[in-house]
Length: 90
Ligand SMILES: [Zn+2]
Ligand SMILES: [Zn+2]
Image 1: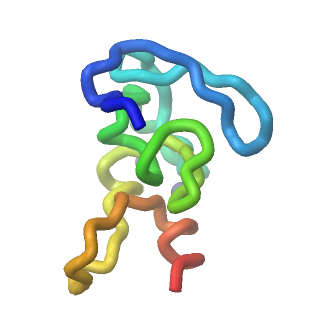
Image 2 (image 1 turned 30 degrees about the vertical axis):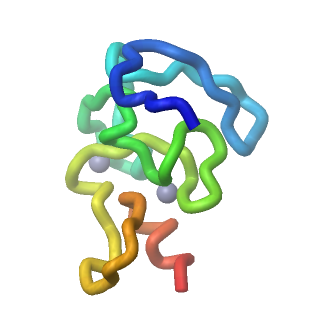
C-alpha cells in the first residue's frame, strides 16, 4: 500500500461504489449522524486502515469525537474506528 499520509488530494471508491474525493486538502463534515463538525478527509480522520474500502472499517471520515474507538488493551496495531464499526468488531 502507498503511504497516503502526505497526499492532499486523491479519489477513492467506497464500498457503495461511489467515488469520493479524499485527502487532507478536502473539506468535509463528520459522517456521524447529527454531527456537523468540519473535518478534512485526511487519513487521520478515516475509519479503517486505508481509504476507500478498508476491511477493518467503513472508510468514512469522522471528527475526533466520533473516531478513535479501539481496544486500548490490545497489543496488536489497530486502526481507529467509528463507533458503529467498533461495535461490530469482536
Ligand atoms: Zn466506521
Ligand atoms: Zn463527529
